[in-house]
Length: 598
Image: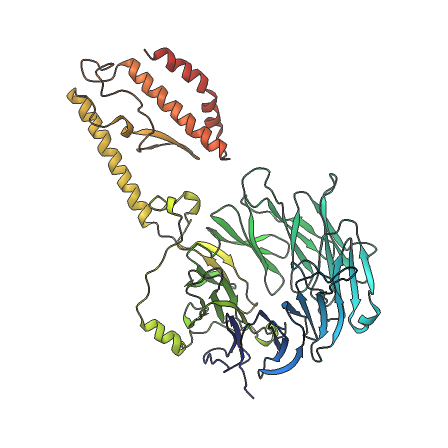
């Protein structure tokens, strides 16, 4: 019998499933599970780990890595435990069995005995699993216009009770000792969408409800106590054409029915992520057009702290994570984790795991373990890493404690640290954008850019990921442009004073370019000459432009600015009132220009 650390983790690669003990040993259980594993899941309490191969589903005791039971069912692609691990659900892709036959592809089993308890037909893989109350006394699933509840002790009797509501499209059971159900009904025939909360023991009238427009779908986020609900609404299309991903809003509902509101966000744009604190008393929202905001709210949706304005997300960004002390809201450390696709707190609140998974990225796959002080304590490279998870554990096992010094690193990480550090790779930029200045919307506001909040347990700091982008290159480029502009202006002035034609080609004459904030002076190539400066026509005896040519030059410049503004307007950019007024003068300017031309 092999004893495994309670702070273990498990990872799945293309050819095996590995069980690894926690810090500081990181010892892999030999010959744990080889072969093609489709997926694996821990039970919520961490007692069991289940894995699905093409032929069978195995349930293993995670304390000693010994088999507990086996479900002889082929082609399972999804598995999930009930809250206490007493039951396990499996899902396989639906297939046609023939005329008058229905494929029962969603099955609920007893974990200890692998006995089938009930089976259903579930076509969609999205939201495939049944939802359980925290005490496992009931589970529920949705069919057209109804939510069916089943008594786990009397499953053989079928449906225990039903919640019938017209047009219901989504629901969510709350955690906590007094379970509630939240249901979503979308807009129809001009009526607003709504979310209603019912007690599962009384469907006659809702405990709380909230109506709103602009909601094609929702994501419902309960706090751990099941007393408050955040509803993130989303439309398929943004009618203002400001966002490719549609419009989003966030609503707050109290189960008691004594408080609800639309969470007021200080910046327009999409809502990227929402998460409750484990203490159920506060939550974080990352929102807004890039660079995005990150704000901490209390249990009545009042803002407590602003983490700043910066681009969110791992993805193509630098993957920097900031760790914050919740007590004093001070930053503790910064972690550089480029190319990461996953980020998790350990159950004890002392470590963070970042991972680069396939198929999102097929190179540099592996996982890293970081202490919250920013020290890399373990680094494991794994070819074609597909999935990785900490073993879950209750927050009650890890009480609040003071900050601790960084631990010793594992032998593997110590060896990697001795090697030369690879050259830091910046964020990916498409070929057409390389060599150009970074757009303002991607520039950070301060030294660290907020990326993604990842709440841990109440006994650890709250991390907010950030993306660091150096501004040295931008400052250097700005100085070069200013120097070039000054040099060209001096050349033009010297040419005019000497009585000679301008040595600069017409396409290099300084012009003004419109921006979101108004008109600023820049020097860059323009698409057409603004005046025939180098010709003898229109040049006075002193070598300067005639009054007519000066007017022609000014009118041409204004028309070029109008053209640029119209192009921006067609792309959906919001123009200032003065810029719209300038566009309205186009016809008069062209008429005046035609009168001046010979």
